[in-house]
Structures are given as structure tokens and as C-alpha cells.
Amino acid sequence: MRARDTAAHREAGEGAPAADSVAALESEQRRLVLRHFTYEDAWELGVLLRTLAVEREAPVAIDVRHGARQVFRCALPGSSADNDAWIDRKRRVAERYAAPSFLVGARFRAKGTTFEESSRLDADSFAAHGGSYPVTVEGVGVVGTVTVSGLPQAEDHALVVEALWRLKQG
Image 1 (cartoon, helix red, strand yellow):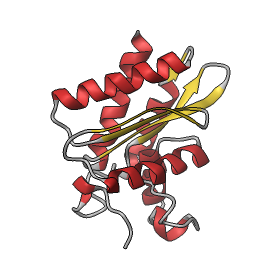
Image 2 (image 1 turned 180 degrees about the vertical axis):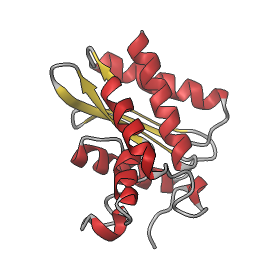
Image 3 (image 1 turned 135 degrees about the vertical axis):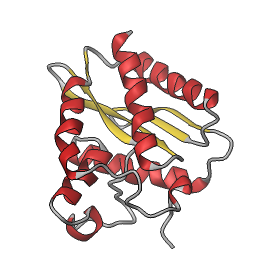
């Protein structure tokens, strides 16, 4: 049995952006470029996400990577081992496509299909559901990822985006 995002026991399409929001998600990604992303920044991002999640009583697991190195990982009450599996699957999508996992799924839906049907990738290893974001540095490119799992996919995505904006604004 394939792992399911614990808060996404609803239909997979819930919280999915409409086709016309692909442009908005792409614009968001272009604006969310950092000046730098050190190991200290990665740790700070993880702590920030944990703080936001605790304040909201969000049952999530969090993963922040600098390159292939895992710098921050935590699981909050209410999350499960399934969330760890979802983190890995969403992160692989963000790494492979150099785009937020939410955006990748939206692009497939905008073409009238789904990631699972058309990507030709193993659904047990890749999930184009919201919550994983490539960390991009100005003049360098993608240098890591940040991933959250445990909420409906649009909320996972929004939490990551909020934390990245806060990190960017210093």
C-alpha cells in the first residue's frame, strides 16, 4: 500500500490549483530567489517552519536540505511515518523538476492529465503534491529543498512559501 499524506486522506485533487494559477505559481517561484543559502540559513528556515507549525498546532513533518545534505528534520505531534515518506516523494519531484512540487502537479493538471498518469515516474518514489520547494540562490540556481508534509497540499505549500518569504526578508 502506498503511503498517503495523513491530512490528504481526502481526494488527491483537493487544494489543487486551477490551471490558470500555473502562471501565478511560476511567478511566485521567480520572486522567491534568495541572495544566499548557507547551512545556518537552512537551520534557521527549519526552526522558523517548526515555530510556525507549533503556533498553528499543525501536525507536520519538516525537512530542509542544503544540496544533498539534510540540515534540519523534525516531526511534530500528530504527524506520522507516512509524512516522512511523503516528504521524500515530494522532495524528489522538486529536485528533478527544479520547481515546487505543487507547481509540477498543477502543470500536469493544466494539460488535462495528472502527474501519476503522465510523468512516467514511479508513484511510490515521486509525488507532485504541494509542500516541497527548491531553494534557489540568485546567480547560482537550486541549492537545496524545503519540504513540509501533514496538511492538505495547498496548506503545505503555503506554509513553505511563508517561511521562505520570511527568510528572504531577513
